Length: 636
Image 1 (tube, helix red, strand yellow):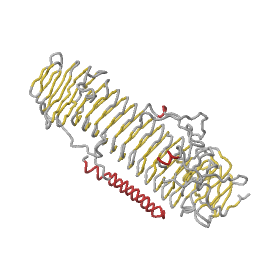
Image 2 (cartoon, helix red, strand yellow):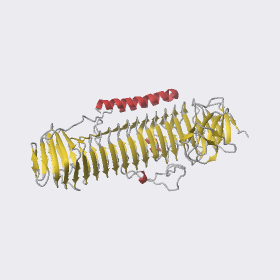
Image 3 (cartoon, one colour):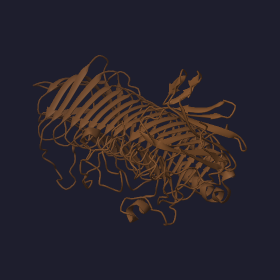
């Protein structure tokens, strides 16, 4: 894929994001201008991203043949041998085979020379330097001959010409562009530092490549591109890294395909600027995985606890641990964009982390994270994909979150989806703003998709406002009264879609009264997990039948089926013969349980409270707001 095509794809993905937000904000009154300005700025930044995979390479017939061994032989021009070192000094294609003990292959050609090296069943070790060292060339292409196994090994300490420069610092080290091609296999065991490093661009076009490194696995200063192949990296440092921080058009990682398996002590993939994934099958374990995550610092009632899918919160004392090394699965200093691919992530920290923007256009994500599942400091936009976050501290976090499409299932020990700015969190010691404080700047826009949240903290949390235009949202909220299934400081404006939220009663909120779609908030005696709550019209039309995954004492529903002037009844218990997806039933017949109340809708928010249950007025922005019009006791 060339640079122009990548730029067009990025621009198109942001057009989808901006269109979704713009359409959503038409119904949001005074918020339209601010949100459109923010997304327009995001589009302007991301549409200027230029990443290139370059032209594909192929290798022809060799014109020079090098046989390694106790007596190295060279048949052809352009290579010399001295002191167990083979030095290539001219452009050409060089076929190398055999075993070289404590020696080197050095490329020191002209600035405009392209050097092709065919590895044909080689074993090269060097105890005190890089076994393959490209000092100078326009470009070096290493081709792995079909059906061959090639091994490169270095030692634990290098004898360097320039100690200050610390180079070479990889078992395969190049000062020029380096490309790996072919269908053979290559294993690199790097005991000094990095496995394969280029000070310019590093590209893997094809091949079966295994890298074991005590520092970074694959490193390209200007870029790392993987077009295809099978790549396995085990590293104590970063798995794949691009480090140029002086040029915004460099320092990127681009993955267009292949099967990639990374086990890293630090970041799995670290891009100084942008990380772009178009396709491929990626499996990443960083920092030993989520099981090694430190217990989070206590941040408020119910926060900082370990996650229990049944809703319980452990009594383990939470401690604070500063992050001394970065061990996220995929991290970018600027932006992350996914067009597709399959991601299997187990990370001790964030699974995905962008210091700026993150756009998901498609892809399949299976995530277990010790911290955030998906994180972006500025904006996070989901236009599609299938996202499964089985474990996280916070599932999705960014200052501005827009969900236009896709299927999302997430579990979190704290907030499920959190729209919060980093500066606000820092100023509040990591806690959301409290009742009586001004609303934050966080925004959560839901324009479509299917979203299911299972959170021990707040389910949907905005240190600012939430806007829902379309889609289906199911929230299994907290069991502790210190958090709520819905939590916002500004407004929660619902103009469409279906919202189902169940959780504890202590901090419960409903959508705000500026919503144009009606909602019902039900407060009832605590019910155990999987106990059905059912809402129907006075004539018996089913509005919703839902079995929350955890204990609950409140239930909120917003649906286009709820009509002003109509009366609705709420039942608990009973049974349904319908099909349950994430607890929400469709089809079948509901067998009535106990009616707990009914109400006639006269405003956007209607409250129904079970007889004998006390509703407290708690702190927290708009908590408990709404119009309890038309409330009736259940018929006996």
